[in-house]
Length: 66
Image (tube, rainbow, N blue to C red):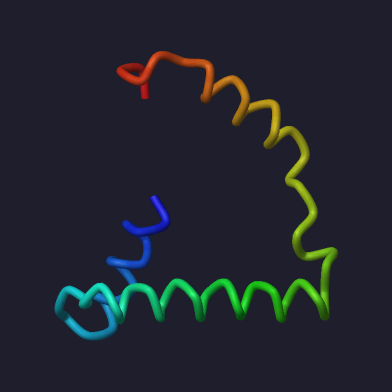
C-alpha cells in the first residue's frame, strides 16, 4: 500500500513512473518528514478512537472479503 501511494504521488507530480532509486528517495523523505513532525507535535499522531479495533477486525477477515 505504501508503494502504491508513493507511485501515485510521483505520477501526479512528474507524470511518469519513478525509478527504483527515485521511489526509495521519496519514501525515505516521507518518513523523514513524518519523524520531524512527530518530534515537534506528537499529539498529531494520536490514534483515532476505535481505529485499532476496526483494523483488528479487518485483518481477521478472509482476503476475498475486502
